Amino acid sequence: MIENSLDAGSTSIQILVKDGGLKLLQIQDNGHGIEKDDLPLVCERFATSKLKQYEDLESIATYGFRGEALASISYVAHVTLTTKTAASPCAWRASYSDGKMVPPKPGSSADPKPCAGNNGTQIMVEDLFYNVVTRRKALKSPADEYNRILDVVQRYAIHNSSVSFSCKKQGSNTADVHTLVSSTTLDNIRTVFGAAIAKELLSLAHTDDNLKFNLSGYISNANFNTKKMTFLLFINRRYDDLFPLAAELHIHSVFVSSDRSVDSSNLKRAIEGIYTTYLPKGTHPFVYMSLGLAPHNVDVNVHPTKQEVHFLNEDKVIGSVCAAIQNCLASANQSRTFYTQT
Ligand code: ADP
Ligand code: MG
Image 1 (cartoon, rainbow, N blue to C red):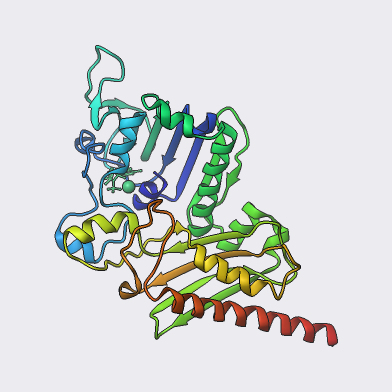
Image 2 (image 1 turned 60 degrees about the vertical axis):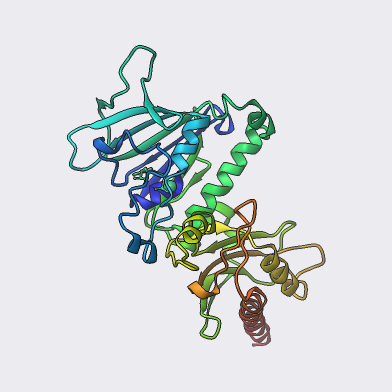
């Protein structure tokens, strides 16, 4: 849902949570909204407004284009959508179940209802997994689930510093994440992780012409260490979105400019390895990294969890990333020694 809001060009995304998202997960954005005529379609499987023709696949710059997210959610929760485009004089509200628009109350009409509202879209997801007891039981406690939501919001907030994010529990006056439209990546790292980390960060930038990738980010220096590594990794390729269509259409690689938060345990392990020479035993660094991979560097293999990624020439790319980190740490260390001597 956050990615949908970003796709809609939002500059403000506000998230409200009740009972760890089990009772309520609500996202309000100020994006371009949804046309009233499209409302019957948005929760239908494979309905997407983001792909108009085959050629779009080569240049698509949005997160989504499979049209499955809202459909899936409507099968396992009660979904209510309120949306307004700039051209519409009022907002429209519709409720959904099992992919279709349904009456909000038994006996009423399923048609969208006019109502007051700001430009943008609000999606209310209530009673998650009300009809799938086993899935609901597999979830952790509301407090744990809320922390997982916060973790996701924080990652997107740091990576999308020109968008304002907030996340809070229903009934609470203070947001647990709150970033501003005008902030920088570094500001948001400070907001989320604290000034103690932010002041020990080195800016990292690297381009590898042979392997055709670039990277940028912030990594902690030798003054900072923590018990558990914070690793925020974004890659400009959506494996879960791209794989089915790419395979179906016999396209081997599609380049997407939007980034998403992913994991790579190989990369993480390699980075930890570098830091062992800089940090006390048993302590770890903070790393935020955005990787831009060229199409031919990208493998279409999908990990079952769809979170963990692998890329082509992975060993070489990881080697090159590690060399960049090594350089960055070494030169910072040198200037520090130099500084103490003078
Ligand atoms: P996809 O993102 O793959 O197109 P989704 O199921 O996530 O599919 O969303 C279906 C459609 O609903 C989108 O293509 C878009 O037209 C519309 N939509 C969903 N969320 C928003 C939003 N926050 N703002 C504007 N349009 C939205
Ligand atoms: Mg989507």
